[in-house]
Amino acid sequence: MTAGAPVGRDVRRSRRVWVSLDKVSPHLIDATVAVEDATFFTNPGVGAGRIAGAAIQNLQEGGIVSGASTITMQLARNLFLGVDQRYDQSFDRKVLEAGLAQELTDLYDKDELLEMYLNLLNYGQLAYGPEAAAQVYFGKSGRLDRGGGCSPSAASRSSRLISTPTTILRQLNDASVSCSI
Image (cartoon, rainbow, N blue to C red):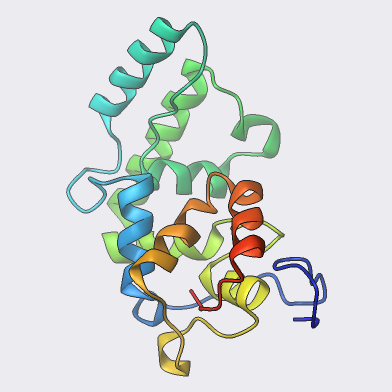
């Protein structure tokens, strides 16, 4: 990372580095699952209850305030839907996403799904996956086999990059955080 540059602004870094799940910090895995889909390890890939609950909440609020996608549904959306479809909040798109998630669940086990999800995830600043994010934000490897890793609190902050990268980037820059994912 360029000395004195704000965290996450060095565009010369690699943006995609695939890391096997066993090399990812367990704190980051736990934090991501807690934030994105607390029932990931027990749900069948599609959360019918989550979808119904989100539909009710969205109706009550008069707009989209909750998406209800499980990690597997998010993975399916990111793998198979184009940008024009990915952010469509229609019922038809949600049904398509659920069907694709079910197919992924039939083909892969939970660890394989989580590895794909984490490595394809945009952590902001065009950093896809936890290793690229560690390099971009912290200037070092996050791989456990290379001395990387992080505390539970740093993992929590990093997992929030998934949904609010700009806000968290400001906090990282302000706090001079120095750990890896």
